[in-house]
Amino acid sequence: MSQLNSVLLKALELSKPTQGEEKKISSVAKEVKESIIKYASSTKIKDVVLGGSYAKGTWLKGDVDIDIFVKMNSSMKEEEFELLGKQIGLESLKQYQPYLRYSDHPYVEAIVQGIRVNIVPCYDVEKWNWISAADRSPFHTEYVTMKLNEEKRDQVRLLKKFLKSLGIYGAEIAKNGFSGYVTEVLILKYGSFQSTLEALSNMQEDKIIISMDPINEETVKKTFKHSVIILDPIDPKRNLGTAISVENFGKFVLAARAFLNKPSIEFFLRQEREGTANNLSEIYPNILVVSFNYRERSPDVIWGQLKKSMNAISKQLTLEGFNVIKSTCTTDEKTEAAFIFLLESITLPSYMVKTGPKVSRKHDSSKFISKSNNVARLMWINNEMQITTLIARKATNAREYVRFLLNERIDSIGITKGLVPDLGNKTQIYTANEAKFTRLVKKAINELTTIEKIFF
Image (cartoon, rainbow, N blue to C red; front, side, top):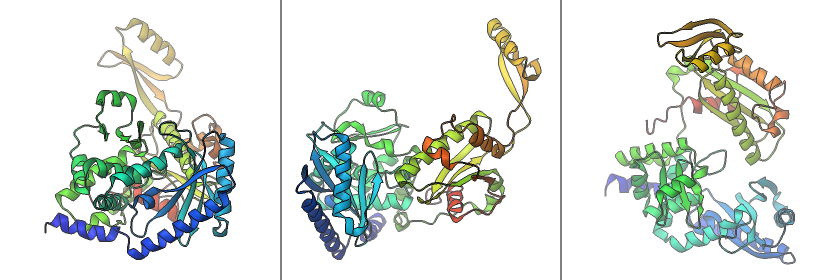
C-alpha cells in the first residue's frame, strides 16, 4: 500500500461517523421533524424536508448539524414568511431553549441532545423561481443525494476534514472558507479527494473557474469578478466561490501541493498555530489593537459589521500614509471584539514628499503649483524635471489618528452604522507591546503573526 493510500485510510477513520453516532443523529432528526410537522399542520406549510450534510450523508464524525427546511407557499409575503418561520421554529423546539439566528432571513437554532438543529424557512418554488436565498437548498440536497454514491461520500468527508484542519472550512462570514456544498461539488467534478487536490494544486491562472457543465469561460469571467468561480450546478448564475476569500483559497492550493508531495496524517489534524516567536518582540510595537465591548447581537451580524468596519479603518490608515501590512478582527460572539492592524510603522515622519507633473505639461504644472502653494514647505524641480513639494503630514501617529477617526469622523469613513454606538470613549487603542491584552486578542495576534508551517 502506498504512503498516500495509508494516510487516507487513517484520515477516513477520523472522518467517518460510527454506527452509534448515525443512530443518535437519525433519532434526533426524526423527533424534530415530527415536532415541526405536528405544529405546522394547521399553517400554510407545504412540506418539511431534511437538508445539509446529514441529509446528504456527508457529515463528519463528531461534527454534525441537522438542517430542516420548512417550505412555505410561494404566494406568502415576506413579512408573513419571516414571522411564520420564527413561530414554527421557536414553538416546535421550545423545550430546547431555541434562539434566533440571522442570514438573509431569520431562522431558529437549538441544541437537541448535544446536536445543533437549524430550522430554516424557504419558499416552495419551482427551479429557477427563487424568492429567498434558502430556496435553492432543497434542490442542492436532492442533486447531491442523487449524484453521490457511498464511495464519493467518503471522499467528501476527506476533503472536509482536510479543510477543517487548515481552518478554512465554512462559508459563514466569520470564516470565509469552503462550504459543505462546495466540497460536494468539487468531489462530483473531480471524482475523488486526491483528484481534487491535484486539479487545484496545478491551477495555472490567478482566476479559477469550476463548472459541472460546458461553459464559455470568457463570458463567465465577465459575469463574475471574484477570483474563485465555482458555478452552482443548480443555478449557474450563482457563484459558490464568492464566500471563499482569496487568502483561504491560496492556503488550500499550497496545502494541496504540500500534501501530495509528502502525504501525512498531520494534514487532517487541527494544528495549534504558533507565532513566529523569534520575531514577536520586534513585531509587537507595530501591531495596533482597537478593542471594545458591544451590545450582544447575532454572530452573523457582528462578524459582518466587524469586517466591513475593519476594512474602512484600514483604508483610512492607508490614505493617511500608514501602510497596513495585514489586518484581522475578532470577537467572542458575545460582548468583546477587536480590530488588529499590523503596520509597517506606527509613526511617520513629520513631512512627506509629493511629486507632481513635469514642467513640460504647462496646464498641469500650473494647476499643481497653485494647489500646493498654501501647503508646501518647500517646492523644487527634481532630476526628472518634475515639480516636487515637501508637505507637513496631518497625522504622524497611527494610534492618535484612529482615535481621531472614531471620535470625530466615525459617521463618514465607512464604519457600519450598527457598530457606531459601540465604538465610544471606552474603546481602547494601544500597540501590542503597551498593554496586557485579553486571551481573545492574544489569540488573534498569534494568528496574525503566524507562519503556516504545514505548507510554508
